[in-house]
Length: 124
Image (tube, rainbow, N blue to C red; front, side, top):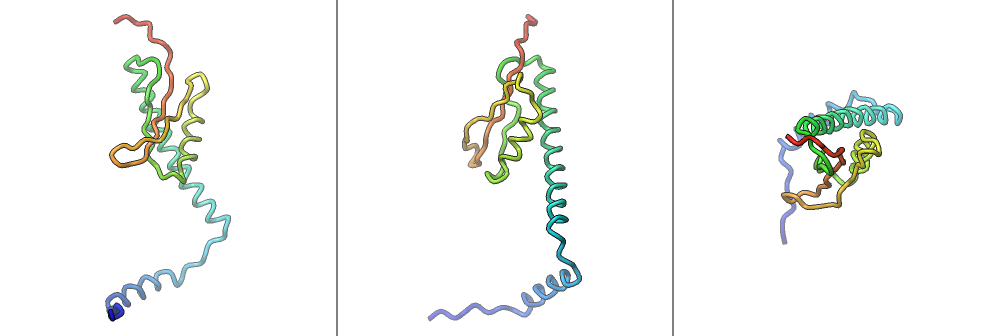
């Protein structure tokens, strides 16, 4: 019969010191915690939309036209709707924003985000 694992004194000391660091902290109210989460999402959303804008203007600077990939979204499935909403919020319907099907890229679950740019009539 296998012996139960023993817990070392070092492990107990680490656990006690971690617990002590929380002993003087108060649990925030539901609303306060919700505000913390909302601020964090707004920071992530701003960073994401800034990256979308950067990619958009890189396409425009090279006079891209037609359906263009503007971003490859790789995020946990539970957060995907937030990012898709932020993408759609940024591009009006004239750009025909499109969310691609789920793909596997380097072992990760991704969706390609596309927009359609006007035709470039420049011949140079």
